[in-house]
Image (cartoon, rainbow, N blue to C red; front, top):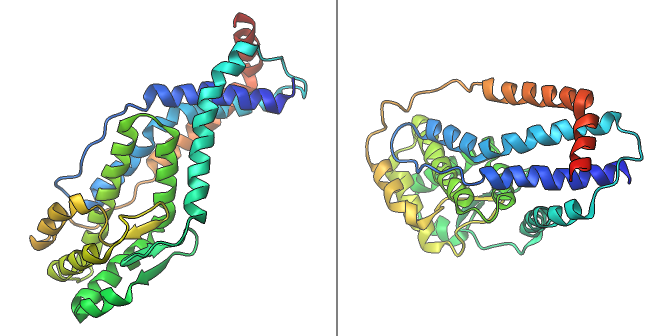
Length: 281
C-alpha cells in the first residue's frame, strides 16, 4: 500500500484516538487575577490535549521518512476504525473553511481578518458613543490587532472542533475567549483608557451587535452572558496584579524538543513498531 496513504490512515486512527481520549480535559472559568495571566493559562489549557496527538504524528512522520514507498498493507478493520476519527477531522476542516467564506456579518465594533486584521466600527455605534467611549472601543480593538486575535480565535475554534463531541473542548474555548477579553481590557487600561469609558462602549456594542461573534472576528461586546462580570471588573480599580509580565518561551521550546525527539524515535523504531502493530491487528 502507498506509504502516504498508510500514514494518513494511521494518523487518523492513532492521533484521532489520542484526541478523543484526552478531550475531556476540564476547563476553568476566569474569575480573578491578572487578565493577561488568565488568558495565557487558558490558551495553554486549550492546546494541552493536543500534545499526545502531535507527538504521535511526529513519530509517524519520522517513520515515513525512512519507510519505502510501498508500505505494509493496512487491515480492513483498521481502515474502518479510522473512519470516525477522519470524519471528525473533515468536519472540523469544513467548518473552518465555511467560517472564512460565510457572508459578512453586521458587527457593531469588531476586529476582523486573519492575516491582515482591521477594525470595523458600525456607523450607528459611532454616533451612539461619546468621544471617550469611542476612543476606548478603538483602543480595545487595536489591542486585538496587535495580538492577531482573529487568527487565534479561528485556530481555537478549529482545535475545539477537532475534539468534538467533548463538551469540555468548547468549554475551554469559551473560557479562553472570556479571558482574552479580560486581557485586552486590562492592556488598554494600563495604557491609560478609563474603565468606565470602555464599559460604556461595551454596553452600547451589545445593544447593536447582531452576532455574538464568529471564528476570525473579535467583537467588542463578546459573550453577552459574560458582559455583567466583565463590566463590574472594569468599574473596579485596576488590580495590583495587572503588571507587565514577561512572555516565557519555555513551553513552546519543550514542545519543539518533544516533537524532535518523537521524529527521531519514529525514524529509529517506527518501522518495527508499525509492522508489529499491523501484524497483531
